[in-house]
Image (cartoon, rainbow, N blue to C red; front, side, top):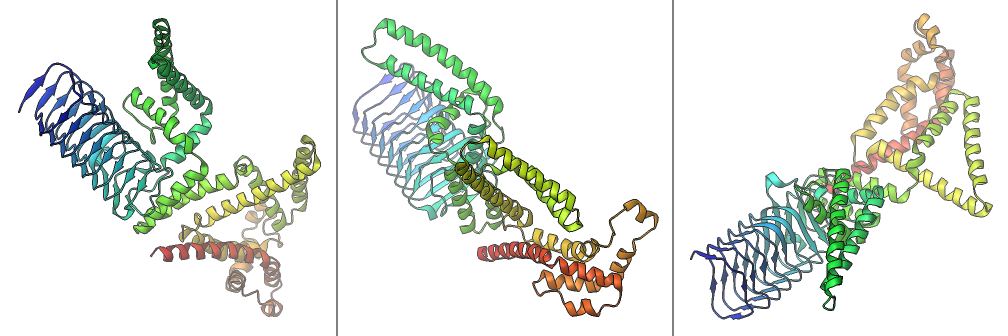
Length: 539
């Protein structure tokens, strides 16, 4: 049945029979708020050029908006669907709202395209399918899914659009699947997803980026937030029934100014947003996303909640045996954890490692003047910090806290360097081979034998004698290195029985640094053990 409806339709009625508007074109808006549909509702192949309102409406049988196009806003607010709901191959060019709606039958939005869609505080009681969909922004806040759920983005659009699942409850997580939803464009904040199936590449999640963005652009973000509050207050005043004409006109003028200011601020913020995470086609989509960031995401956005989100997604990967993705995601999780545990460490990280390297080199090569100078610099920094603060007790407690944080920060660095937080087996093996085959048996024994005194002189005299001895007796040095590295202890009898004076001194030098070899060994072998254990646990 083909119809063209030129006028607006506004009806409050109970439809006792089936409603058939197949292949119709609605030039104006349609308003069926507070209506009840006893039979099926069929808008197959229809086009809606005006707004569509089904607010507080009840549908007792199937609802069909298949191959339909909505050119203006669509409002299914606090509506109840008792039968199946089908929006196959439909296009929503503006906003669509399903706030507070209840879907008691099957729901299917397969092959549909959304601009901005909001399913907030809605309940889906039966099988729900969003298959091969595309969208600008999709948000589910405090939404409940009680049965099978399937979400899949179109392959060509998998890196487009933002989707928000905050405070969502999946009652059947083992029957819930997400495919082609990029983690860099999906928020699962305060949503338990560890038992659902997520098929996606491992990458930094959207909320991790937003957490950083809000901190770095706090001034702009707060300004946007305040502008939104002003606009909301003006809208409330404008809609207040006792507002007179003069006040109404003032509200309209102020709203116009504030909205213009909001657009300008949105464009300014848009330039600072990383397009890998947030990339829309127009300013309005950016503005709506920033609204969602203010109203939906930011109230719950904390380092702890983002860490929990990482952990849940990683467990989902592990439960679904996608261990490579789980391993990569664990590294992002640990990077965020170190920011929580050692928030001030990054500021002084470079200075700390320069000082550590200077002290280590000084100890190994006997450069005691350099070591004393380094310790003096550290002491001066500590004293100047003390002078800068009043209250010695309070200050000392602060120093202890910072020292603890610095040590933890160094531990995080070592853990990352040696094994990528226990996720790499290759790194500890390669580093161990470098130390065991080169550093310990070749460099370490020659530290006290002037093998490094004057590079130019030794080049002139060809190969240094100690290094010649090292190459000639490499097997003995390697053997003792391996004994120390694997915690067996250097054999003193072999040192005492050696007749070559240079070789004997090399072995004695190696023995004097046995403690150093053992410490390096514990770090590397411990990292290797953790990495192997984690791999085996995931098999």
